Image (spheres, rainbow, N blue to C red):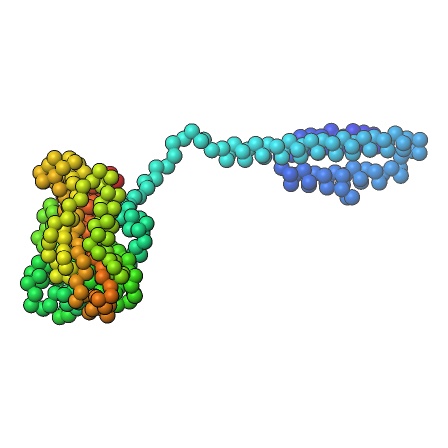
Length: 339
Ligand code: DAH
């Protein structure tokens, strides 16, 4: 019996050494120490052992059981920590490796300037409204005091989509739609694309951008027009900017003006940006014609207003010293990347 025990001990320890997974450990435990295990089977043979030897054999069996249990436990924890180390090694991240380069998009310079412009007018209490690019003759011309045979139509060569449907030549159409839908006091701007049959060159494009503005309330005067537009010009071009109002003509305003700002590049000396004049024309404006007001159901005896149309492309090219308007429409990434 002693020899059998000794042999089992040698064999068991050898097997135990070779165990290499938690599953093998569990199988071994069952095979050796389980109810039908080898050590348990040996114990059953105790019957044939002489009574005086039984305590000794019993102790040996217990010692072997204890030894195997301890070794199994150690083995299990060694295997577990090896497995953990292997996983940590496999999951190691080298934080010193260069990262993946991701290019970040940006706003188009036109949108950039437009956002600034919207901020300026919002802070003065204006709402931003939208209008359709395909317009009827009524909204684009007639309601703006440009009847069918009016010579002002020649100022704007129009793309016609159908008999009475055209691509808007000016955002001014938004004035009419707004006055039809809102009661005074009205303070809105309407940014958008406009279209004219123009040849493409460095300063002309058949598609360009305007921002229309309209204010209608009781007691609005030319002073309000001047105050709002001077404030706008100084916020866009800087506080030192000089603003000049020149008499002009638009069918839908009376009186009408064109507004120039002193060139922010040369301070009025004359340079490439202002074509040597020292001034940059940025918008047309005027007091809303009484006929336009009454056409929209607003009594010109009670209310008055001013309107303006800002050339957004001009604002953007002068602000960023862009020499050719075409660059704004070609969307060449090498150009856009610079903003
Ligand atoms: N619609 C004009 C244009 O395209 C610009 C303009 C001038 C708009 C005077 C206005 C205005 O609202 O009052 O040239």
